[in-house]
Length: 236
Image 1 (spheres, rainbow, N blue to C red):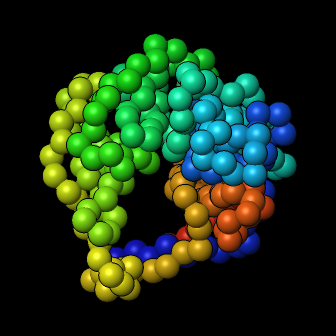
Image 2 (image 1 turned 60 degrees about the horizontal axis):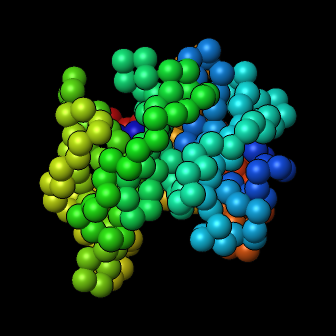
């Protein structure tokens, strides 16, 4: 069993100056040219979720950069709420998904210029559908995990697809209850972060974790996305 731990302080990775004033939930990946891209929630407010209708974008040639990532033009401005983007690559096509309440989808051949916007799930199984994460489990099979809500407590729902555009609800993947964050038998560590991304850099074989958040929420940052190195302690 290997346990992750943060080995140094968080430092600023990116904060927008033109497209918004903060970074919240985000995704990080390498584009077709090997550069690193960050796409995340923002708005020109102090954190009004109803104003979050496009994503801020940043890039860097290396990761993490020596300074901070460079701000690029925003994306996904389709006139609807834009929360928690998630990007995956399949057969040289980049797929970006986001929510809430419905599943949006855009594609790109290089991870920079996005098009072909479509709402591929208009009526999810649950109205609290948001914050999607997609995991490929076979050659042409993907599972989509999203937040949801049970009778009283939050839960995680799972959907299935064989083509990344048509999704079928499967079942609840994880249910929570009073005090569930303290009684999970699988809990191996705790890390200080909000809406974190895990990044592995093959060139340096180094793991990183990010954190982010609105300025007025009690998070670890003042609106910026920040990054810290991670190591693993393995036990036999």
